[in-house]
Image (cartoon, rainbow, N blue to C red; front, side, top):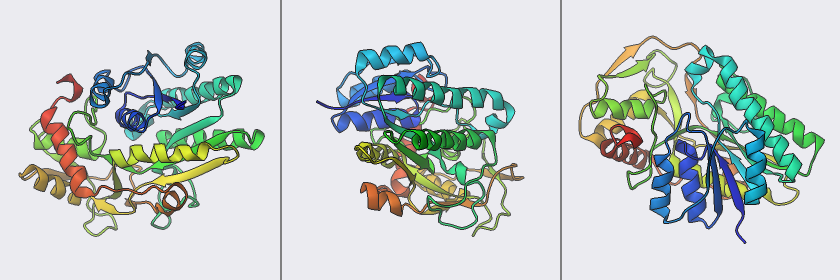
Length: 339
């Protein structure tokens, strides 16, 4: 019988693509989402693309009663935990909301998992836990530090899992540190649906390209990088989703606690991303240089060797596909799932 995977935050950008990947690799999926930062239409699209139905629970991961009900009814064998707030800038404005949502949610989930004897978890972490890197590319053993409350909730989440495993070695815990997921499903029907002003670069660029915004705001052109703009490791959302399915092999008995970078190992600057999407869209995309934002770093990209060697996973899709799929999604859905 197929494993039953609970995906918290399964309607979000990464969550919905991972649900699709799980269904396409013959897993049974249960979704929990409160739609505070996602749209129910994403799950309808997943059902249409896969031809498969799955239970969806509308609620908050902090609701222990609801979690207990899901585990009892669905016989969950493992959890992929995406549910959380994720905007770096916003986290500095409302830090208490981030600590409450991201940490209390994780704690309640772990307490319920412990009570029902489900010991398999993949935790959605972030490259923000590396802070301002001392050297590049980043390996999983690089020093950890954070520059904002969002990153701090991810680092604290990792520490909670390390303490839990130290106390009870029967858990199988995988921490995945994402770099910068971009792109969309090749059909153009499933993609990133930012609410309000996009906090991520690529949706901002594509919104400018289709006329929803005037110009791209480039924060800083005097970093110690080849063209002075920030350099990041962008990974196609489909590659990232495949990384979660690959990480489930670490749920074997006795595999313990594992940490993996999910990135390509290749850094691209902000201006390179604007040029790449300009080429894809067949038009010049206007931009203006603004002053640096506090907390931003010059460059950040992964060494993905460990995931390749231990999980048999590596990114397959390059910048051309990332730009093409992101632009197709934006072109077909200028207002996201509201279209």
